[in-house]
Length: 556
Image 1 (cartoon, rainbow, N blue to C red):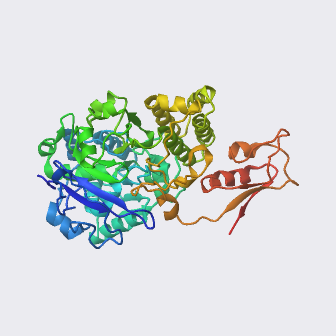
Image 2: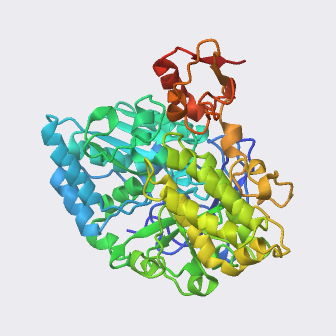
Image 3: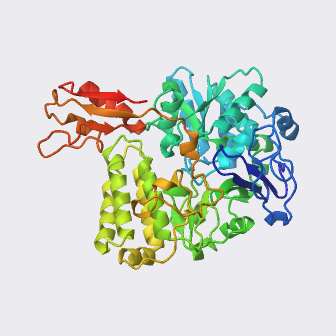
């Protein structure tokens, strides 16, 4: 059952006023991005359209008159999905080898079984969560699905919810246009036996972490809990929760219609089906699993450049030689120490400085800390600063300091963010050793930092602490999306009343990195800017101060 044939390209609208996000390309035995029909590009399989319109959700976008697939068109294209029992759902997931498409690649059947076990402990109460947060700057695949084929995702989520007897389906997203698309799709379905809601969450890197996502959907601050509790044990509303990525549910809906045998006819026999890839932060490509990486790059008119980052900013760099031969399968990538993760494929162009690009990303990753643990809120900025000093020419001692800082954060965070950031930097050091050695020695490479790796709000994350001034930002970069899409938060400050402070020092432990103690044991400053991510901890410090010497001042 081929749900989409040949090659198609449609633009993915971006949140205004950020730049247009260029095209969505589909080739091979494409099935998940069904209904996104349009004209085949002038180059056949290799034809990829450029940017199109971005306004609204009801019109056509770019060449080919591609439209969002509404409920009626969706049913005309696909038909209704079957109803499955819980045991049939497990069997389908096992027979198709379905794995999560959000990063870890966890077997879907094991998740379902774990929720079924938890259901026995809660008297049958469970929930289903769709993770559409996509905090990775180099990823747009979930955005493409939820904007253009939202009913395919809802089909998979509701299929699982009915099989498990879930009392709610919650879809977590971080873009306003995506939230509108999902809510419209829910309304198009009319009354549902299982309630479904879409909720707009804070746009940050850690939003998609399991406990952070369910906390945000429960109207909490949306921060990782720091406790190793699986969502299948305790998730939404404290219930056993089937939590998986947007694409995973879309793949489930396709597999349920096709059946295991037809589904397995495409892709790598060890992990069959198709996979969605975001290439260069600009194009979403659906390809059979096991396809050569070089073919995907060629479809998008790209080469491996200086190397290809696989798996996003918690991922691994492949050198050009490996990028030319690697297959996009779990087994083949494992041979290079890489995983596909959330499907980000980021080639580094020849004209940019690898060391400077790494510093930009490291500084952004440090700023994306949830602010809950010392190794993250203190260790990651220190790691990024050490890397910046090394690239700025501070010598081998500075490079050694980077290694020390990486060891200091590994396996010590409340979530995987410190480990993933350290892994990204370690991979860059291994992939570009001569580049970093030349920079540390003061020679540099003579190339500018073009901003080839997408970094939201990139003006704050230039090399050497200076804002980026290059006008060479990529047209498809989501550079300003995070900051421009978020509503302005009132400025707040944490204040110390010196007439009451007795130097207990508890505040420095509760808000590390913000309150620093002087040699006398008292806070160094009486007023400190209070970032949004630290407000919960600051309120805790206010409540616990033995001398009642702290308070939060609300600004305009």
